[in-house]
Image 1 (tube, rainbow, N blue to C red):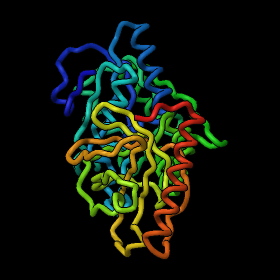
Image 2 (tube, helix red, strand yellow):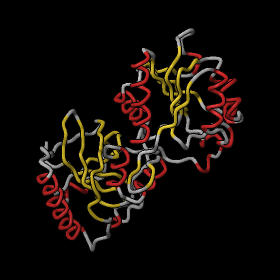
Image 3 (spheres, rainbow, N blue to C red):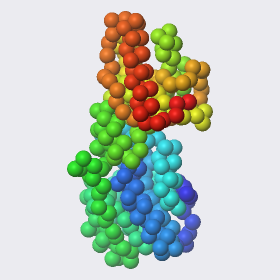
Length: 313
């Protein structure tokens, strides 16, 4: 996948593209359906497939107070996009100059001087330009002027509603990681560096790897059964997202007990995939009561992976 950081990086006279446009946060099932379509159409027409996206998220510029936490980091998003098979990705730096353009101006002044399109495929609720006032009918009108086809792709429906990034964020924030996975087509995951904690888990016979997650979208507080990838090895895990109320810590943390591992991993990158919610976070009378509950959590996690025929460690 070729990655172009700005329209000015695109090679001149590079032919027409079969393209789509959007933020594509999460690269969920709806996004995947559109990307699959443009890859297939580009292959049929011997052209290249292109996603035009934006960085930072437009709301961070036009309405910072409404800027969402993103489902994926830039690296995760690039990995997901590579897996779709698209040939080209153009990341447009989103700034005030772009934000003030209405849909027609954005296309005529920003896209058209740099790109030629054979087809553009978008979701039926596609919006673009200042105030999100540009829509599919406007895109069709532009297609007639610039001689490209416009195709709207039917939404993917999960639980009787169209899949969307906002629905996925809501599910994650509510701790419903099962629903999020159904819309993403894969488990929601966090990626970060393992950092040194206070060592309480080891004292409770439940050592944990503490994940640095600055700025990441986090699930609701609670205990989750997780799948973890670290040092090229896959582990079953149980992950606590929360404030450790038994110890009155206050600060939110993400701590994972890796089933079948008892070493140290400080400084390593770990991916934590959230499979299902196990229980709410709770305050216990003391360390002994907490240790008893952690033993029950561990037994439940082991049973989950045994039933799933998941190799641990």
